[in-house]
Image (cartoon, rainbow, N blue to C red; front, side, top):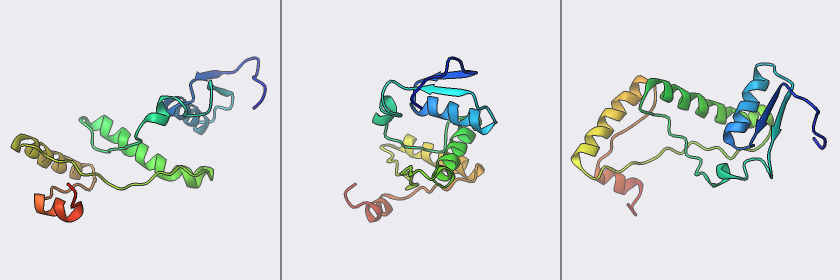
Length: 134
């Protein structure tokens, strides 16, 4: 769009992940009078510097469900929009530096299964097999 409208039902300032998400979700529920303003290019600010990691297990039920929704959304955006997102689900590896942290990971893996998420607690030998440089 080269010319800004004189008015809009919603004006979103900032084309980072939050601004784009708000615009996307409003249009998904049928809003058509939405304007997103960005100073430069979309996601060129703080969003561009973020690692883009999307862990699905969070401290609360609601945050975990939100993270799961986010993962499902990111996985579907490329097909929905025809735009390459670069989104990949690679998993992650967290290292316990002491017994307490290890027990926390064991509890987390148990909680993950309640949400249908895959999580495994692996031994130091298994970590070496997966990533010899660790």
